[in-house]
Image 1 (cartoon, helix red, strand yellow):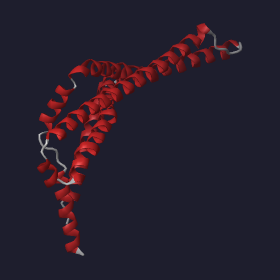
Image 2 (cartoon, helix red, strand yellow):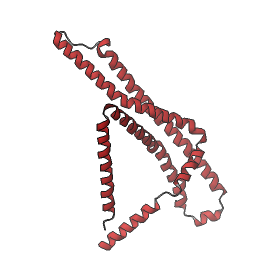
Image 3 (cartoon, helix red, strand yellow):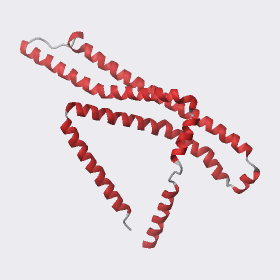
Image 4 (cartoon, helix red, strand yellow):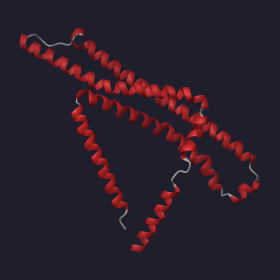
Length: 220
């Protein structure tokens, strides 16, 4: 049983080593050159992500302002004995503005998702066209010594994974980075000390997790 576990561990390690990308930076630069006609589209996506992040952070802050406004109006009506009601001047305008913020947030999210999907699919089409032209130029000896499944995997599955990574992974990365930066800015705005304490404990948690994970990987 121990030998089987060791063999499985070695096989898994070999597979992980095999999946490690080679020349990743050169690949990224080559993809960037391949999307020369879509750089403006990607710039619009980045601007949309920035605006989406800003509005997503602004919405909770403004909703807290509305809650405080309504609560103050409720307390005022309790003091005077008048009936509480929400009018355009006593909260309706603020609620409408909050609705506009959420609508703009949804609009920018839809825009960046649509543009990123278009960006990925156009790149995928270009790569498929280039691969098709390359395969048509290859000699028959290449197909004789290369397995059909390997060719299909590189021309179909790999491109599908690339398109999926660009549509979802890259967009989530941009959004996550924007949310982290925006959240940290707002946290520093409210309390520098509490933000520093949060960052210290977050760093300790990350280091502890990395240490424990490394120990578990080294177990027989």
